[in-house]
Every structure is written in structure tokens, then in C-alpha cells.
Image (cartoon, rainbow, N blue to C red; front, side):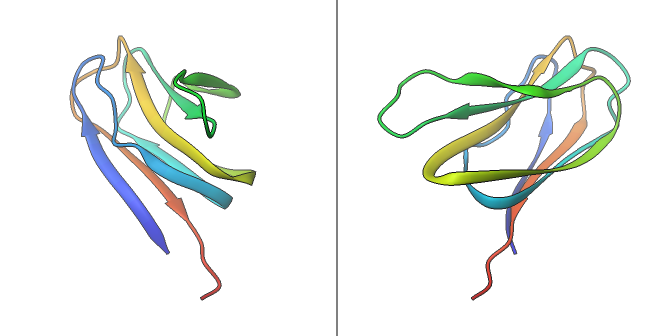
Length: 93
């Protein structure tokens, strides 16, 4: 397993991470506001919100990304300080 984890400050952003295959999204300690999974596709400079991936409470969700080169990050909006976020992907190697 390969992962990146962060603790978000208010309206903070997590680290960018390469998403491909089955990827877990973990949000813990969220008591205010929301955290959204955003992606940036290859050869794009624009981050886009993932549909159905804005969380207003603690969450553990698996998403599947079939395209290689997609980057992801978790972004807070009005969130409380100290929210733990983690993106993980699995490798069969």
C-alpha cells in the first residue's frame, strides 16, 4: 500500500497524490464544514471536485480511478482545525 496523510488546518489542502486503481479516502475528526476530494487529469492545470466526494462527517470511501496520471488531493472548506485525511492506493507488486 502507498499512501499520503495530512492534518488539515482550517480551509487547508492535503498533499497531492497519484491516484490509480482502488483508492481509499479517509477523513477523521471533521466536526465543521466539509472536505472534498479533488482531481487533476493529465495535461490539465485545473483541479476539479469529484462528484459525490464532498464529506461533512468522518468518512471512509473507496474510489476507483482507471486512468493513469490522475492526481488527487483533499481540500477543506470551513472545516475545523486538525482534521486527519489520508489517500491510499493498493499495488499488487
